[in-house]
Image (cartoon, rainbow, N blue to C red; front, top):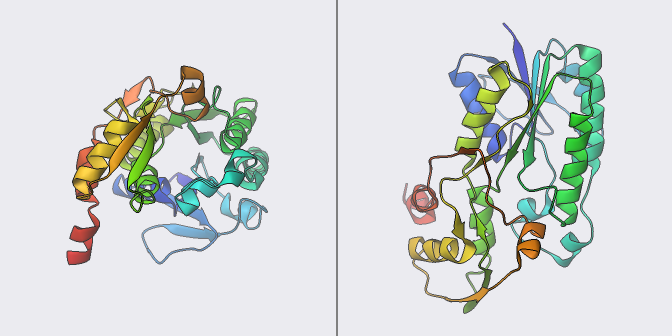
Length: 270
């Protein structure tokens, strides 16, 4: 049976991708720095930033789904001043280059790279790093696919939760359509195994709303009462921040429904 390697398989999107591969009866190997305990997949310990363990992880692999990334904003759930000046590139650029090279040596038949919608106009350092990694994939001689996705609901939840202590929330009014990782995972699997290659349809959430509307739904779901100070942005500034509306595929899970499913009070009660 063909073997699929998932990098970033222990992350939010990666876990959903792995779950669907297992559900579909596919043989799965997960490349991670800290292997987990689930026994329905193979684990390969290593680090994409250094290349440790990567050669062994690619043994007998037919398809690679590269969902690995290093976003300090996502990791900490908030924006720090340093994020406007630099972002680490060891995983998204160096690691992608190393992975592509070893995939070619190992005879990998399909390399699917998960990227981000709107990178061509985005100006934040992390976006520039992601774009550099994506360009490496597009220039590769491998048989490749690129799937761009909108920012994930879990990240929006983290960012808004960090505003909870403020009496007034400064929130941009720009339109965008974040998406759940479960919908992105479904789209990624379709693109991985439908035989097509190249730049695939990007995917976003089902609702294109301004961030103020998303923040109000968040407050309603979390029973918060805070004043929202709407901040207008030019189109160029919104695009620079990654606040865009995707074209192509749309997920099905709405933000309000995601908030209900991920209510911390319900999780604690369970």
